[in-house]
Image 1 (cartoon, rainbow, N blue to C red):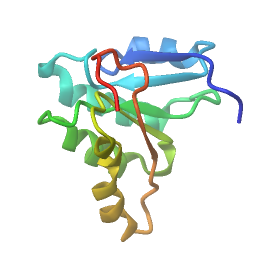
Image 2: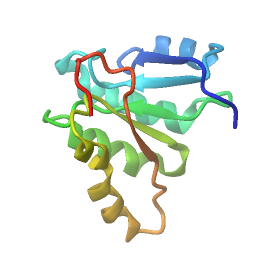
Image 3: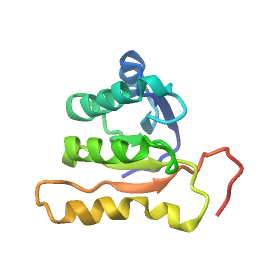
Image 4: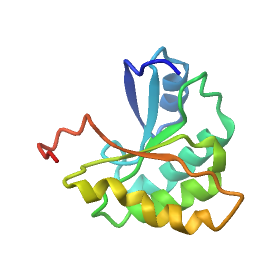
Length: 137
């Protein structure tokens, strides 16, 4: 594993941009379901994330995506649908707008639910350290 020197966020609503990001020299390219996607496009963007995780060549990049903020109605579906559909292809879930230490544990209910199933891989959950909301822990 090499250091992650560069990260590229790409709107999950745009398959062409997903392809370009995965072909880039960035160390990490994460598919963004959050700020880069209009509310009316969230469900379709989630389907693009699933397709990219299942079908695309990530060229050594860790397969990753950013969920919507924890206080939105999109967050739950972002976690459940993608993790269930992509299994061990997924390496990292980026959690945005982490405002308190407890927010980092957003994946715990998902992990508890899936630990009872042998066919589901559990990704890493990490806070979005590039979040510019002004919050800090």
